[in-house]
Length: 442
Image 1 (cartoon, rainbow, N blue to C red):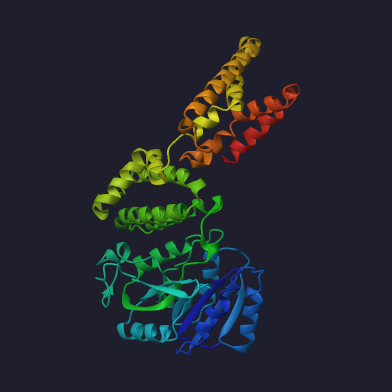
Image 2: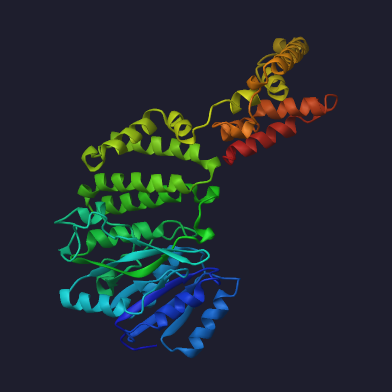
């Protein structure tokens, strides 16, 4: 390893075998040679770790350390603690960089005497051929080529992309303020809190209108289709808010709310369909609290954003149904099924007298259900256009799936399936239902 490197580059990795060669090669080819590369692997089992070890053997500037936690934030923090450079850089293991990135950014940092220097990005997709899209760090293009800091220009938060790897950050500054990532599990938005601390605490930030960083957009592992990731972005903005309160930077609270809105909307666009409605409910709840706490500044928002947010706050379900452009009806279809009707009839009983007359009630439910079913079949033959759509084509499909997990539905389904032994299974069904409810399965 170089004794006094100009830049320490941290590369967090976990199962990046498809991309790791291009990533590391792009760093090793830097025209600035006085660098150290700290690869922090979190237990890759696809060959990534072995590839990094091979690089370590052939280039003394590269060092591999093992993270005992699968946490992006923890990996970055390990790299920071290990770093000995004047500046810190970060390269994601599925991205790559231009050969002159660190030489140019370092030269500007020394000339301007800045804590942070950042460039733009090039989004890219690997298809039949590689496709590129230029991405501005500052989309208003008003913050480039000037020394900035949060105390004199709040736009450094509101008009710049949340992006750390496209720049370099003075390591003494990072260690002075003990700036670290949130160490939540997995790779889920921990860069957001790190970015916020850097932007707020730096005395000098310089943005360069030139792209050096290639930012991959087609890594399927970065999508958000698991319940574990749905609320990670909420946790990260809570982490940022706690940082602001702890450090008495109260003027940043409305800005956090503005950034939270953008982050929540971006997260919503990435979520699997089955999680969108409940996440919209979360947006509604959080922003009601934000408004009640006096942490909301409408002047930061565009009129369209305010209109959308007001709809979400006041009627989250209406907003969900509007964005799906599908009719409602799945919940009613489930409630119209015999399993639900019978189970609901059973659950409504509260005393001994109710249970005595239960057989009569159940007979009434059965008679009415089969009569209605017969009538509907006749109507649908005459007017087939009235026949309901498949349940999955309704906007409230995922709400309907939750009803199938309700006690009413479970009881009704069991009594139809095992009418003579049903009574012996009631306790088991109830225990499973309570367990699921406790674990928030629905």
